[in-house]
Length: 312
Picture 1 (cartoon, helix red, strand yellow):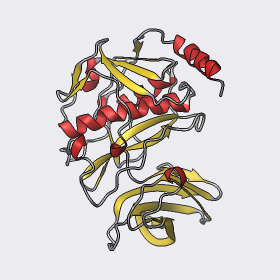
Picture 2 (tube, one colour):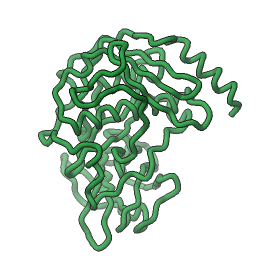
Picture 3 (cartoon, one colour):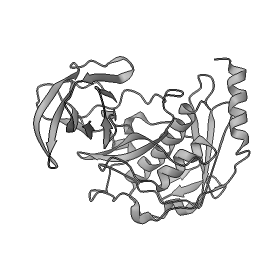
Picture 4 (cartoon, one colour):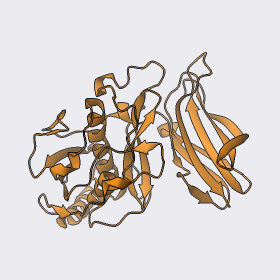
């Protein structure tokens, strides 16, 4: 890509939110927000990857340019004794800027997957800017921090915004060159705000790969319907015992027989770009896809992710 043209395109896109623009966003009722799991006390970031049973995500690479016309949003998901970041793509109202569109939905939307949740509150004002050096600034009003959370969830939620903002910028083509994007968060137009009383927002931040889910399914999306072959797409990490999948038929809301199963990656192996893809022929009906990792010498399933879907 021609760098000067790419930067010009970014500048044009950002012109709609020149400076640190506050774009009005009327928040929906928090009654529709996902319920925070009962186990809402999480370890701090420094302790997040201390468990020997689950590997740290290999990388936090950015979304592909133009990979999806939908808006990327990251959510929190409880998995065993930890909470990780998981991404969904959604069709949401356009706010005139892709970063603002995704962040607004992150603050007030509801994940498709019932296993995901959110601790943010709707913000009265949201704005975003991005420089030619891929420096993203998101300005939100302080009402976004209305809930009470512990330090671990506060740190993860700030990374949730960092992941969402950088995903939106990458997916929409606002990033230029090879410089890793950073995200600065201003609150009510000022830096230095202490989010939820734990995280001081006084410097640019990058993605923390330790908080990204070590294994998760991107397609099929939760609750989706497919007409032909099921095309599975997801990300995995290097598990010492390998990673695996199975598809179970669902009858009357209950999982039943396994209709397909196999290996995603061999022990201590990592697919190219951490991606896995499968094509499965399934009869019409409702199914659940389950993916998991294993440690060497153990049959215990770790880093489990599930998606329910239908074939028509």
